[in-house]
Image (cartoon, rainbow, N blue to C red; front, top):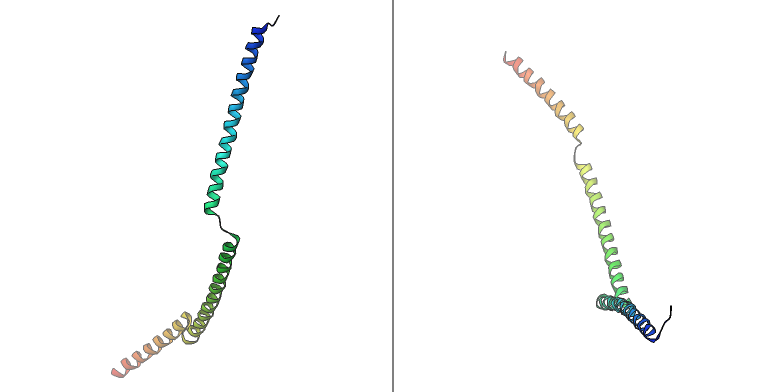
Length: 119
């Protein structure tokens, strides 16, 4: 098979077209990624916080957590004192029932005594 000047010219033209298409696809892909990265960078710039601000925020959170812990400790202590006072001033259910049954038996005995005295 012989290649004359027209064949080489056609082969060069096809190779150039193919390289142009591949180059365009690669360029489109690269620029698309650059656009995505620039959008991500823009989002980060809009939403980022500096180290100084971050440290100030974390310090403020730590202070608030310490305050909450101390408040919880005092409330727990108050609840313990309230429970202790309730235990000292109130009857348990079993004690109440026992005293109530004793009072009922005394009332029954008193009613019997009164009924006997009437007769």
